[in-house]
Image (cartoon, rainbow, N blue to C red; front, top):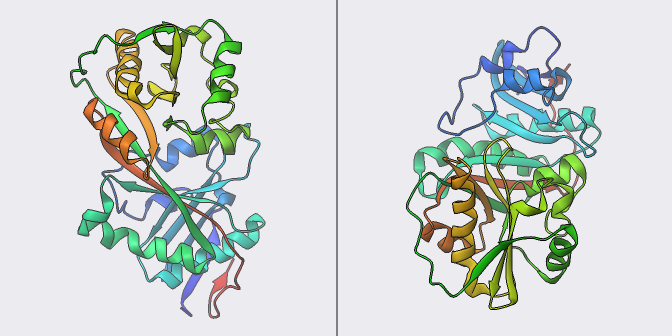
Length: 306
């Protein structure tokens, strides 16, 4: 790696990032130029690895304006061996104050797609070499107009009365089924969406729906129609039997408000939740594997930075 140069971008050469072809064009991501314009990306938090002047690795850490947390690695592409990517990450980590979380965006069903594995194995191996460890995986699912299941008639639904009613039900729900944008809420606002959803989902209480079995509350769902796209931000249950009908009710409310697409995020290990999302008409569109710092190894020899 003696011919490798690793360094951050400087103002005026932002196009260098996009000189590397996008290895996963099927992913729906914010473009680097748009991220710069919005203030989330900055040249000094964008690093490249160059061989003979050609970009063979690139990494961009994202921090939205006004965020209270640390930047996270949002874009990391590698057209070289994992050691090159590790060198890039080591150098950037030193400049940025230490290893930072990496959100690896991947196409849906990536483990079953050899052409995708051929692209993602190197940067993921580089992340591990740089002292990051895999923490978990979240799936993004999308509903785009599929007919909704018919209601059984067992449950009724009504808007939440106020924030106090929402908070009281949230306190009773141990592990919500759906938390869309949980990692962003934590990084940007320091909010745990599972325990304090109203601090992030600032839509009116009337946008929340409570599921009732007779007079007994059995589920709660919070939607947002004015985000980047309509989402099911929070869905939690006190009775698992209501899951499918509460999901359908949330989508119905958003669709009646004009939504043509609805997004929901779910942890990959929540197999029953994912199955119910699919029965409701959702399809997987993206995976996000989260890597977190474990240690700070030394930078490999033979790499020139700056």
